Length: 131
Image 1 (cartoon, rainbow, N blue to C red):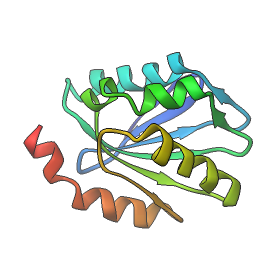
Image 2 (cartoon, one colour; image 1 turned 135 degrees about the horizontal axis):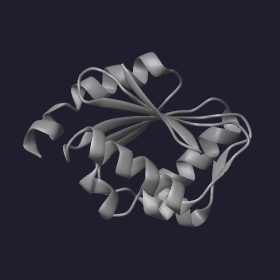
Image 3 (cartoon, rainbow, N blue to C red; image 1 turned 135 degrees about the vertical axis):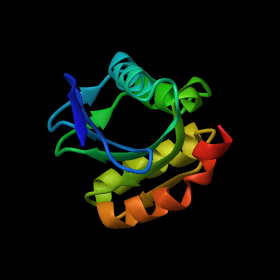
Image 4 (cartoon, helix red, strand yellow; image 1 turned 30 degrees about the vertical axis):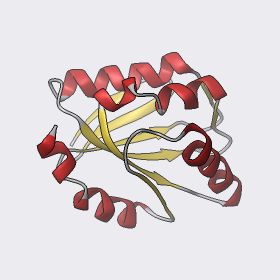
């Protein structure tokens, strides 16, 4: 597994085209930090899309602008599908806002744990092959 440390997050490149981004504790994620994550994915995968598992540390949230950027059509250049691991009810509410309000232009699901998120992402592998 290859891991890249950024200021806001850790980006781990797993098997099967899956990338796990974990946003660090106590952070307000900005749009430029989302783009830095996308840039690392694009560089490390030589432009191939990824299946993204996202987890967020305690006390971490995204600005509205960061959520908008993470769900924009531009973000689909880098990501084929998202699996969001929700850690608690408050985080689930925030993830629901992202899914329902920002409406990413790709498949996205929320999961209670990493194992279920990874299983679902493996079922989305056909999206990479089409890209």
